Length: 286
Image (cartoon, rainbow, N blue to C red; front, side, top):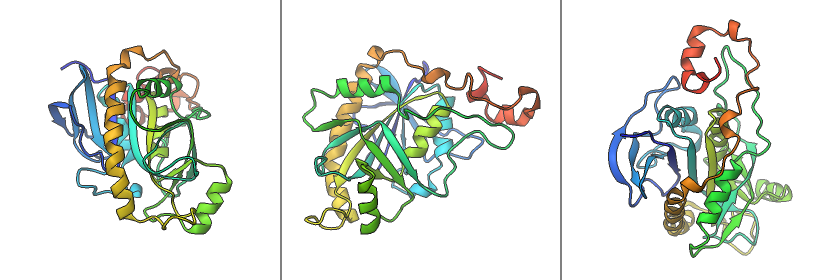
């Protein structure tokens, strides 16, 4: 089978990919443990695609339990160069209604207990995260989705909270004052780790509710989220298919070289086991 260059990470409600002709199901062992599930490798729109449900099939891992490092590392090992990520979010603005899709281009981190880097225990790198998603992949998703009957917002800030509880009203109002667009619990770590792994990354945020700031709406609960999410997932699958179909049109970007000047550690001082642990990520440089 030829190399897999496109990865899809499905969030709540997206545990399988319609139209994906399954070729192989593969567990990828990593130095950081096992990914959330076996990765399904298949053919979609003539392209090899690696699909992974971030919560595991059956939704077994809460946001803080997801092994983000293993998930991204496994994609790197498979040769993935572009990740399309899908996640359910709450809307923090009136104009983003439940059922809308936001193509996120910025993040704010409010998590507390999650590893967010591959570079530790004997190696240090400082990678630019000023623009957290790949602009080329971001634009491709947007252009590919223009024919889909859904309201798609180009750009937005995603605030990532620890979870698994939803926000208090006070927190929700505080985040609103920061002018964020959506609130979620998963994508920040993916974006950071994909950047370190030199993988292009873009997020489709599926608005399911108005969190709890909206006084004319009921406070968010899981049943409300699931109802809207099931409708959103259909749209997200269409967006993925169209983007995969058009992947050859993706313009060149700088994501594949971000580590060139980011590794601060003296290569002579980096232990062999550290180099081995990060070999798929470091092989171009060390």
